[in-house]
Image (cartoon, one colour):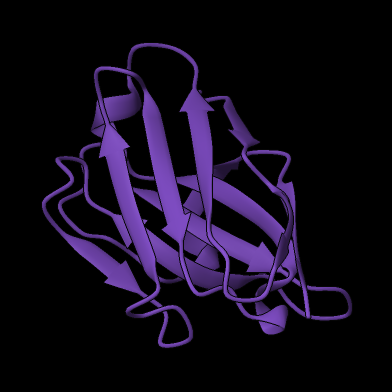
Length: 127
């Protein structure tokens, strides 16, 4: 079982930056690939970024490629999402999630592959 708590959301003007953090409980954080997803009002939850257990491999949605950076610090049980050049369409609740398969060698863009979820943090980008 992994408990996740996101932080770092807020309101920012278009073109600005935010760094989201997701802190995990327990001592098994390093065994899970991690992902960030987001959900805008009236829309389905969508993939944003994912990172392997070691942090070596990453994947991004086309919508954030070049603007977002996912990273992790296994010593601190924390995964981060740095978002730059924010756009109004980035407005959403952002969730971090842990893969349902510990020790997996892969990273997934599929929501159903993630079992543990945080409560989300709101990001609002104003024009």
